[in-house]
Image 1 (tube, rainbow, N blue to C red):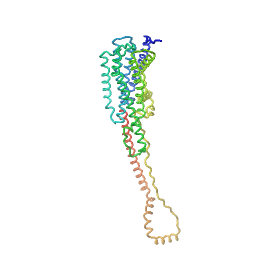
Image 2: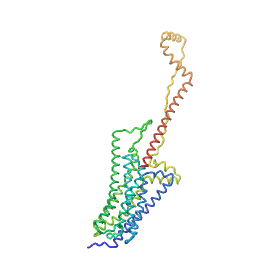
Image 3: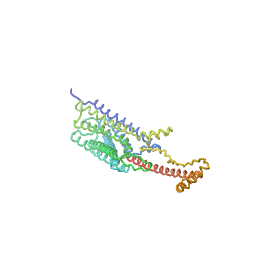
Image 4: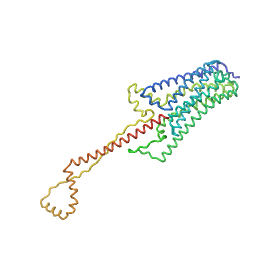
Amino acid sequence: MTFEFTHEMAMVSNRLWAVPSAVGAGLCFLVLLVIAAVGIHPRSRSYLDRVSFRIVVYTLIANMIFGISSAVGGSETGPGFICGFSVFILQLTLHFSSCLLFAIALNLQLVIVHRLNGQKLEKYYLIVSAVIAIVLAVPPYATGQYGWDPLERVCWYTSDNRHERVLWQATTQMGWTAITVIGEVTCSIVVLVFMMRHNARTRKIFVPVRTFTETTTASGVVIANRHRNIIFRIGLYPIASCCVNLLSVATALHSTLSNGIHDRTDYNILLLSDTLYGGRAIVYALLAASDPALIRGVRALVSHVTGDTQGTTSSGMKGGSTTYTEPDLRPNEVFVELSTITATDKLPNEEADTSRAMGDHKDEDHRDRQPHHEKYLSDADPDATSNNNNYDVEVARVRSGGLRNRMREARKKDKEELEAFTRQI
């Protein structure tokens, strides 16, 4: 039986692209509203103060516009200005969001492995991504490559020449999308291998010891280990890029190389391509909505509105950094051993014998006289012993206070380093 790509099949394909795109755009908009509410409130704003999360916000905006343009392009039924312009906006936001997702993984590597400041590099991520998106999207649109696709009967590339079509798609879309995905995966693997090697080397060389008098400054990778949940969570973006972007590139390339829809297999691959492009905005909206920073920010905002103070203190994290609790340090205990004199009643003859014994052992009595004198003073003047005890206790209290201050300063410095690192990743 001969296969024929009918108008009804084309409409099903276009709706499969347009409807999920509209849903994804709506989800991105809702997540952006939640982020705006959390970011406006001063109580929860600090939870979102992270370079990677701000890049995620820009990516959400791009994906929302991508979803809108995809829904418009999938709803068109013929050539026209809206058809070509919707594809131009689609390609522009597609490249911009792909470059930003690569920037998230690259920023992790630069901060953790190479010890660079992510906050200083943030503006370059945005500028370079915007420039790349413009350079890749403007030339095809200026030369009329975006518009009605006669092969797939949808708004896409207009050329029906396979060689020309493959050349434009490979150089302005597919090749760069694949490069960004490979870059994301590579940077994520470099960071994970670096952290695993450091942890293995640390377990072999060092023994974890906590002292009360000295705290060393943690290196970047040690601090990164404390944020490994956030880092592993960021690593989900390369996985999503592999599942969505690489598969979409492969399916779109198949439709181009086959030079149209000629059998059922070509049509099924076309439907898969429409599903991937339509579901792109949904996937990244869900990833952003499940970000730990946003979840903690929402909890802090809700707990503040409802008056529940346990919501922020029980989480143990604020702005991505660890919240410390000052331990209960007791002053050093001083034990003072007091001498005791035992008095006994003696008979007169016993006193005479004692006198002769004392005459015979005059030297020994002379040596014993000073200790007995001190014992006598201890019993005779209890205030002196009390003053000495108070002095020892006061010395112990002063030393304990100094120790407490040093520990407080060390924890404050450690907390500042954690917060600074969190803002950079």
